[in-house]
Length: 232
Image 1 (cartoon, rainbow, N blue to C red):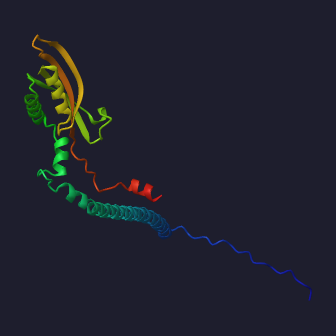
Image 2 (tube, rainbow, N blue to C red):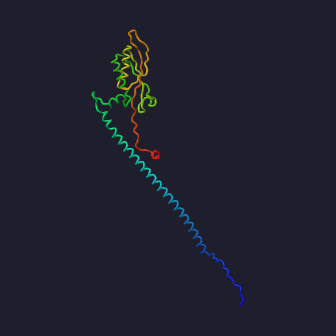
Image 3 (tube, helix red, strand yellow):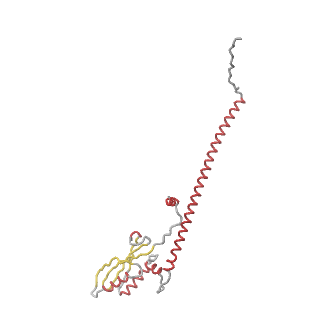
């Protein structure tokens, strides 16, 4: 039997009829895909925001813990310093033979206020002891700490001008008493305007007077930036 050519069946494309039902299903499928994509994007955005908030809160809490640890470290160091300084403090507050402690002498030499009234009383007392006349005492403007390079940064100063009348010996004795006074005073200038036949000299002397500024107590808190630099 002769070979006959085999016939191949061609596959015809399946044609879906476009009915109202199929079109509605197609629209529903598209809407479903659109809503799912939008929902996924919304979940990603919300999840990213929540993750960002959680990471930020974690970093904030970590920095807060570091700051607390640094504060505790500084407080412990201050406690150690106070323990080491206590013997020195106990020593300077013990009264001496004259009933005055070293702390009293230091505070009297450089008080924590300008003490202008006390300066006037001291100058008048030294004037009486030296036999000179002091018609007036005038205070000049207060100097800033940076104006006095020989003094610590915790001190300030001001000048007083003292008008004096007396003999040369009395003036010299008065100047000597000011230099030996318990209050820190630096003799600056002495100007003589004239003298009388009796030997009384009219002059004006200026003195620099020092006092302490309020104590600068730094906070125990430290910036994390400085802490990081120390750890590097």
